[in-house]
Amino acid sequence: MRIANSRSPFLFHLVAFAIILISSPVWCRSVRQRRQEPAVTPGTPVPIPVSSDALNDKDLCEGRSPGEYFRLTSDDDCRDVVRCSVQGLLALRCPAGLAFDIEKQTCNWMDDVKNCALKKKTKKVQPLLSTDEPVCEEGKLACGNADCIEKELFCDGKPDCPDESDENACSVDEDPNRAPSCDTSLCTLPDCYCSADGTRIPGDLEPSKVPQMIMISFDDAVNINNIDLYEELFNGERKNPNGCTIKGTFFVSHKYTNYSATQELHRLGHEIAAHSITHKNDEDYWTQATVDEWAQEMAGSRLITEKYANITDNSVIGVRAPYLRVGGNNQFAMMEEQGFLWDSTMTAPLGSPPLWPYTLYFRMPHKCHGNGQKCPSRSHAVWEIVMNELDRRDDPSFDEDLPGCAMVDSCSNLLSGEQFYNFLNHNFKRHYDFNRAPFGLYFHAVWLNNNPELKNAFLGWLDEIMENHKDVYLVTMTQVIQWMQSPTEVSAVKDFQDWKSVCIPEGQPHCTQQNACPLSTKELPGETLRLHTCMTCPNNYPWLDDPTGEGFF
Image 1 (tube, rainbow, N blue to C red):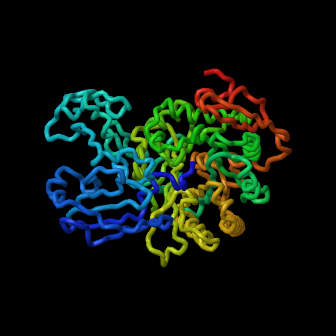
Image 2: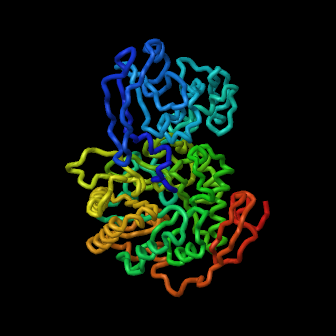
Image 3: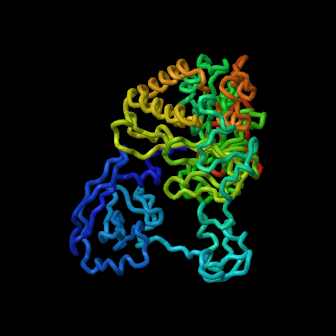
């Protein structure tokens, strides 16, 4: 999952757009600048010529929401859009090389914008859910055209209204069949956990009695490009206060993964989780994927990992979606069907105190955060290890407010080791000094490998924290859930058995001589890929329709 990828479209809502107040019938004047994401350099604001015929604000703005951008003309460039405001029309120009995606309402790479011919966002018919007088009999709701259908047919993923309006109001707040708000009299551990705002400590323990758990995770393929980093971080010398070696979680995507190295990570007690087969570079694919498509990607990824990393203990029970693109109810319905216990894709906006993980039997305790995200609205028997956004400021007492970041490597203002050290300390204290919610540090290995100064700052900070705090434990995500299911005070957690299952790995690696199998598949014509595994080479390179690689479609 490469959220920091520069081609990731949802990053561009943070681009420093040039916003220009249209106050003349011919040229734009009075330039305003939005707050910038430090990683992005804005294009130079350029006045936009506008025909005087286009400046009838009342006609242009009738029926439009104040925040919706639209085009005055459709042209090949499609960098320029406007929106309505109480001050008149405000114009926006995307930086050079980008174009405005009218459906996503954000700037994106020009090659990826396919709707330059559209002047306005497609309007979807809304159902009649709130009316002065009931339109339908009890148990039914009204479509946009006033036809009545059964309430349970709304937001089930299949259009049932003639105008398809039953699938157009399905957010966490709108879905007529949405999960109820948290009810702690019904939601009790070990199987269910919720709180009104997500910040309550399991077992209602005092913060000082709670072990501060740190979750370190890495996304994407495990291979020669990052194995050395993992060996340096998890070197066997860094140990938790219970004497066990520190542990991490690896979200493994299939292509280019070395499964013999993955097998060794599992032997050492780290957690392996599913991160898809294709890691397809299309965010809409993940947002709109069907239950079957999610199953192909995630259950297929697990099957490949279990088979070629020889993981036989049914421990691959977690999921993270590529690009942190939440798949709505379809993703979580798949997880229930396929026996996945937890997800770690959803992001909670920067706040204090941070949130604890929760189950999705009841409504999620935070807003659906992110541009164009599709969060689950229904009740699901799945844990969510929510990604609390990090405060990217290394000196919060002086720095201006900045938007948070979920992945460490998306905190793009971190340029020096000193900055990173201060950033880590500040965010650690946001957890440790308040409700001790698990502190997540989520990485792509390439970021640390490409920044030796930041890597050294991270390792130094980690050693310092572990030396100075005997109540800090680096654990896997499943181990976090295990503690939540049986909250144990820090004074007794050294004997917490679920954290000692693979305390200190013994023996030698299971695999000393791997196979580097040169393989192809009809699903990827023209490509020959090497599958590194200690198991027997399959006939084909495993992929969506053939995850075993045995050729059975």
